[in-house]
Image (cartoon, rainbow, N blue to C red):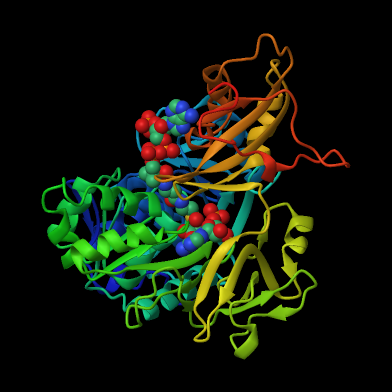
Length: 494
Ligand code: MLC
Ligand code: AMP
């Protein structure tokens, strides 16, 4: 296969990465990644401690050059999810920035520092022909409705073809400077946000941590594209008047892209009214990378996620498995589940053959997202099939994972976790509990801390309600759709 990153050789002097004041040109990145690749030895898989730092980008490029599948992990993972990822992916070693204190949960795995300069001659790495395109490039963990997160195996072919399809949709070139402050352990921030600019031979300017001021400064300093989750665009919309320089910075950008969750029309409208720019929405998933997008050369379509990318087949299917909403005449605007097919799809869930089989309908991947198609084929997402997945700040959170942790608290007899609408986060996590001793229920703080010891901070319940009983159907299944407050702030302990 040709190289995933031709610019490592072809554009040695161009800036590849900027994190704060630290930059690496393509030749410096080739040297640093080559040195890091040398440290991988015969690793079968490598866990990358994916802090929002330049080192994470170097480590992932190194693993891809060496043909060693990389497993990026959130450095703020809780003990339980980290232990699960280590046991499930059985990496040979951990790559982390020098002097990073690594938790005991890593169980004494060998580790190597990520190099930022070459110590020996590392030129061969960037020149070597890549391994088999069907081989695994990255394994990204994503929450499901129940149980622990699943490892989504993404081939080098899926990554390369999807980034090239996005370049076509967004007219993304080596002249682009991409700005974002996304985390580097998911598809959005890492694959699109780091590997995307590097595949084009352009530049990534990462903010370290998202803030409207950081966005204003980076776009004013030459940024041409911005990536963010809707919470980030909401915060930009809120800051349009107060943040100096933000309006001209956004107005001057070539492309503003939102994804990972729905961007409310009110935020679209506020940003467009102030800046004259339309935010472009695209729709993806860990398992599929990006399926659809509003095109840079197309009409702005707020409220839709655009059209399928080149090579992506998309169809809507009803409950009985029949195709609906083909966009022809009467089936326009009929709701169905989105199914997709194409070179963008993942290979499998690691160690989960049954889950992999269940995820497919023939060659089509069942996304679980519900949508309609309009007459021109634009996709409008309208919700999800189940209630057990929550999107908060663009993070996917499985209700079952949090319920399992809370059930281990001695003060909790029963629990259901749901997502409640939130103007900033899209949804926030709510726990509904029945206390073991109703006269002495555990406090919300105690339960939140209990969860945060086991899971990443963003999975903590923001609200806890104590009920006498959970609403259940005749089969005993909790009726989550009935778990809504009659009036804001009325029921239970918060
Ligand atoms: C959270 N916090 C709590 C809490 N819950 N504190 C007390 N009680 C609770 N119940 C703390 C957190 O630890 C954190 O602390 C702070 O509150 C904020 O939590 P947060 O949830 O991280 O929010 P915030 O920092 O405000 O960040 C918002 C955000 C972030 C938008 C920057 O959510 C984010 O980076 N989202 C991106 C998600 C993403 O990349 N998704 C892509 C998935 S891929 P502290 O100490 O940190 O301040 C995908 C495919 C596709 O979906 O299509 O792209
Ligand atoms: P993840 O598994 O974290 O990759 O999340 C994938 C899910 O995010 C999808 O199945 C959708 O439900 C949601 N999603 C991604 N992009 C969008 C978007 N632009 N609008 C609405 N939902 C989105």
